[in-house]
Image (tube, rainbow, N blue to C red; front, side, top):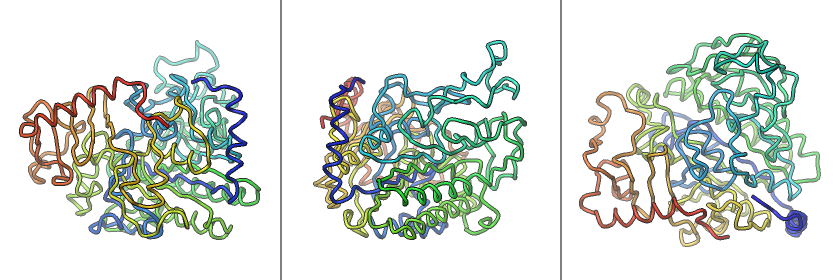
Length: 501
């Protein structure tokens, strides 16, 4: 991306013109592997109390048809922070252990970079999972292991700066452990490791549900899985407290490591729900949000703060057993789980809360995407987007302020779960350019128990207004519609851009 110097210089002035009334503080709370049906206000049959998320929904706008760009972590995060579909850079899987950044594949203006030009102080606290230049820490080529999974502590100089992380892509501050289930298991502040990971990771404590799902590798001495979310919560609260003393707006990207595996609720939350360890972990996460809201209230910031709550993808495969054992369906009425192209892989909780700007207690069935957050925030702060910025992002600000579907500029979404799995959503219809949306095989008997038909057609088409659970493939009896959507999908995925700002 090339941005002229004159444009860069003009942006702060343009944003400054909107500082009366004062620009809002902006917080994105991004859950990790949370299902559509996990929030009580969205799913009356949920077994998990979520009073603080319910508060945001009651005092703001809850979208029932909100989507991430992908059904796995890293691609969704890239798309939200750039306003651009992840598949445009052929990014389909998660960044691997000690993986490199994806931002240098085709550099794009990021959301924090944009807000930084508008005098915002910016922070990412929690999960990053978009890669770093870990190679800069190796002591020499002769020390580099054949596989990074086999790395030992003596191969690294942990005092060196780690580049290509959040600080190099627009954030003024970062604190987190990068990824909850991948090494190195340690705290990183800005671009430095705080505690050298010198020991071999041993999961502590035992996980509350499913498999701990942690990759082997290096860890800081005494690393505990159940200490991660509490530490991130404390840092988010203290950072907000610091910003309250400053004369500038702030942007906080609070990227939870929960309820992603390892399922590790703190002792005080164990047994607090009727949905097992996962339910307890979601309950704890909701309580963490409550603590942040309390701090905003204490600092008298609530009236001028915009909060967006959503998640990177749906709940993991363990949600199948949870539904059977506890009768709690993280996927709600939807089909599939994380990684799937089915609706439950990418249709997620999506709440917007902004007192005085977003009407309270509003439920919208409008089709929206996390990709749209970029252009909408740009409209909030008065930042003009050029054609080579956030080209898949739509400005939803009129929709946020009215709740009327007629004010929604988005008409379609391209979904992608892998190089060979694409789908197009338009209106109530979703067309799959593949036989079905499955990537992770559900447990034996699940499809039969829930009335899901096995695929016997080359492509798939569902009417989500009539069949939210995607039980009846309409491809054969709506073949003309399917072929038209197929042609449209192929055209959209071959174009370099889909949105004109």
